[in-house]
Length: 479
Image 1 (spheres, rainbow, N blue to C red):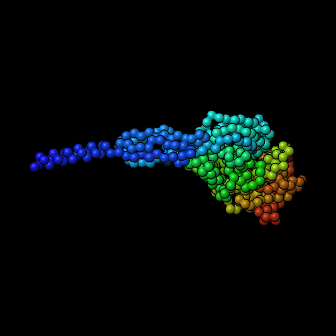
Image 2: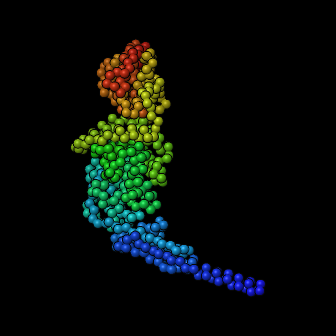
Image 3: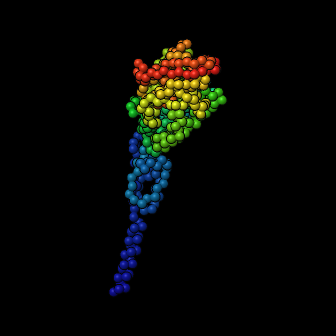
């Protein structure tokens, strides 16, 4: 009896093993839209068998991915269970396109080139391209009646540009790019914001997001980095530095923030290369997670702001466009620079007059001299040089009027604007906030004692503080 039970149990185990090995599973492969493409590979397969899945796009359509985000086509899978796959296709919205735009850091100048590369739905280049040139010194370009099988394109512009911070043409060329949907409009601009969001858009599309959604998310994330909470209906490729509107002001503000100022003639030729390196590093940092986490990069941008003269930048742009015969209203970029500062640096909440400051931090950061604006200091040695230096809170204004025998050296001016200058007085206004402004000043004339009155207008049209200063001896140099 025991022998029979053992034989029966062994037979049962063998039967179960055979039944298990011969188990079959169902594989179903669907299409998200049969008009855009079909999928093959459906069937019944033995456990452990290999199934080949294939997606066949219709004419003027593209395969994007399977529902598990795999883009291989065809692909093989090992069958271990009943499973359903969906092949996602998209229609290629190709056709004939005509559009115009502007290539801008500051405006690129005549001779710069723009290349259009056709892209597929995965943002891969198809090999088809078109080229045009900048037609005027305001960065304008246009393309007419180009035939494309896709609506997606990579625009690349390369050339010399007007440096609005220095008020002169760049010493070498730079390249800016933009990923665009040519069905979105007839205006397609290339600028620093389209350039810096390009890699992020590519990352999101690679992760399975559609191009429109990826572009919207990347633009929203970059606005957050800029400290901008308002929502704009325009894409970055529709923004222009020479047009009114908050979204254009945001673009111009960051174009300015990116550009390092310099009075060093040896350094100026390297600025375009430094700009390219900075944009490359910002783009790479932003691409991974939609944020810029490298504090050293943010510090570079804040340092640029601390050395810039925003009033002069506005004048540079106005004069440049006026020279082209164009009446242009420069947007309110100053407000958006302040938003960036508020988002990324500690803010002062009172007017600050440091004891010592350099009159030219970009070329002599260690060359600090005493500051005559320190409120509780009234006696000075007139034989040495001084500065007028201050830090103004965001959203506030500061004007200083000095009446007496004091003289400015405007060749070393870091952030003040001289609004009035006579033989016995001068008035200066701080043109940036939450950053040091300073300028060299001399007291008196050769070996002469003297005195002066300093009036402080701290966010006010009337003096909020006044002090009398005096000095012994006078500056021995010439004015």
